[in-house]
Image (tube, rainbow, N blue to C red):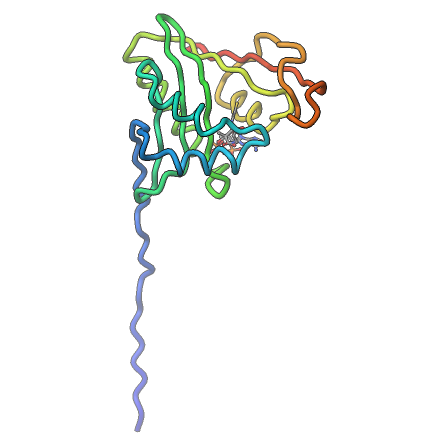
Length: 167
Ligand SMILES: CC(C)(COP(=O)(O)OP(=O)(O)OC[C@H]1O[C@@H](n2cnc3c(N)ncnc32)[C@H](O)[C@@H]1OP(=O)(O)O)[C@@H](O)C(=O)NCCC(=O)NCCS
């Protein structure tokens, strides 16, 4: 006689642990990777380092299990702040992480009594524009022919769209 023993098991669902940190120079390789993965006109490593090391800037990373999946850089002034850069690693896009990162910045700005956030985005970056509109930003003005489309064709330019969020 043979016996078949069946044991019912429940799938183990590991909770996702997201953490936010102040960006430091040690994070630069991950940041450069995400920046180059996402942009046809990426910031150089030097530009990213300068922004991280600028003590005025607010620069955050977002990680899952200690792996950086996105970053945000902003420059606060007295009563408003500018988003300088925000980027989420391709495999994690469209999962709500960009929104979470922006929420994190806005909490800090509220602590500083700052109530306006401004940014500039290329007209061709429709996914980012959709993201900002969904978040509640409004288009407030246009910078005609502000961005070079491609460094190989320096005469071809595109508009920059300035957007603003009041909170
Ligand atoms: C823009 C960016 C930061 C958004 O981050 P994200 O984590 O993908 O965005 P979220 O998942 O939080 O999206 C929130 C909402 O924004 C909108 N949205 C985001 N990405 C979108 C896309 N590609 N197309 C249309 N709508 C989009 C949607 O309404 C989305 O909600 P839904 O998924 O429930 O429909 C990310 O796409 C990115 O890193 N892009 C490359 C770098 C870049 O262009 N940065 C901006 C420079 S100005």
